[in-house]
Amino acid sequence: MTGARGERFLDLVAVMDQLRSPGGCPWDARQTRVSLLEYLVEETYELVEAIETGDDAGVREELGDLLLQVVFHARIAQENFDEPWDIDAVCDSIITKLVSRHPHVFQDADAATADAVEANWHALKAKEKGRSSVTDGIPAQLPALVLAGKVISRSASLAGQLPALETEQDIALVESFSDEYQLGEHLLALVALARARGWDAESALRAAVRHRVRDIQNLEKSVGGRSSE
Image 1 (cartoon, rainbow, N blue to C red):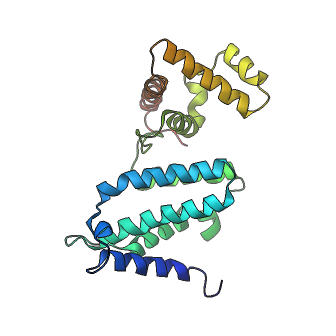
Image 2: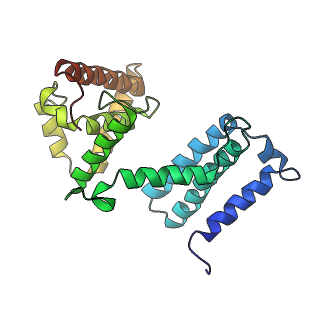
Image 3: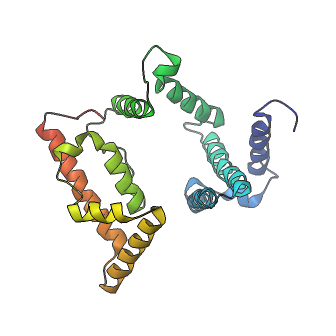
C-alpha cells in the first residue's frame, strides 16, 4: 500500500459524495439518519462479535462498515440547508475533545496511572457538560449488562457510601469460578431460571440498575452536590 496514511479515508469521503450526488445511487440518496439506525446498530454488534471471536480479518472489515456509517451520517448532515456540517467538523470535534481530555499529554497535568487518566477524563467531561451526577450521560438504551457495568464503573468512588450490591454468598460463588466462561454459564443459567418463572432477565436487571442510579443520585444530593469521579 502506497500513499500517505489517511489518504484512503479521503477516497472514502469522495465515494460517499458521489453516491449521494445526482446521478449516484438511488438507494444511498434516499437514506436518512433514522433509516440508517438499524445498520449502525447491526454493524456495531458485528464488530463486537469479530473482536470477541478473535477474527482479525473480520475486525478490519467491520471497522470499515462502521466507518462507512460515520461518513454516511456526516454526508447527510452536509446536505442540511439550515445548519450544515461535514466530516471535517466531526474530526475537528473529536480532535478538540482528545486534546482537552488529555492534559497529561498535551499540557502540564499529571496522570501517572490509567485509573487516574480515566478519572480525570470523567471529571473534565462532567465539567464541560455541566453534569450534576456521575450517572448523567449514560445512555439508558444500552443493553442491561452494559448499562449495569457503566453505572458501577462511574460510581466506583461512591461504592463505600452506597448499599452493598454483593452478599457474602455472591462473593464466595464468584470466587469459586475458575474463569469468565464459568461466570457466563452461571449468568445463562440465571436467564434460563428467570424464563422458567416467566420473568424477563433484561427488564429485571434494567429495573435494578434504575434503583441503583436513584441511590447514587440521592447520595450525591445528600452530600451537597456531585461527588468526584
